[in-house]
Length: 159
Image 1 (cartoon, rainbow, N blue to C red):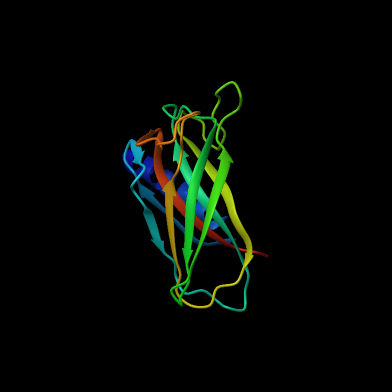
Image 2 (image 1 turned 90 degrees about the vertical axis):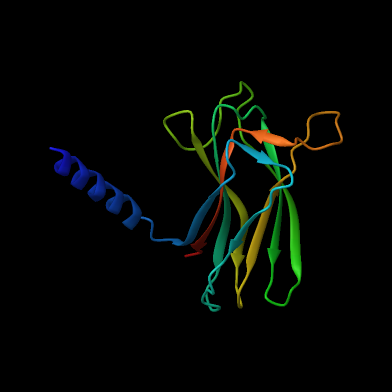
């Protein structure tokens, strides 16, 4: 019975992953139970086909301990020539009533957040992501952002 359940689980996992034809790169890194404001999550991207265009996403996994309506992220794209493009981004994470947005059936939600569209890569890139959440009326950032457990980065074929 145990082997039968394991085989069924393996089959379902293969089926789910094989349906994701647009995925080129998809990786998550754990930040523990709270994301420290000084913690920078870095992804080394693979060398990609320079004739193709890609869409880029920041992925977040959060749980019911996340108490904010939105999130601010600083995302830096480090180019092969050493130049870095930095963006400050804001994403809505919850409904006004506090219900978390994202996919998931339990209190853990996964949010796929658009970062850039129609990007062409030429060489080896890195992505650095840090949180920049602040409470209303306060200048210092939230030192430990509870509820964010994993940060991911995803690249998909544009077509």
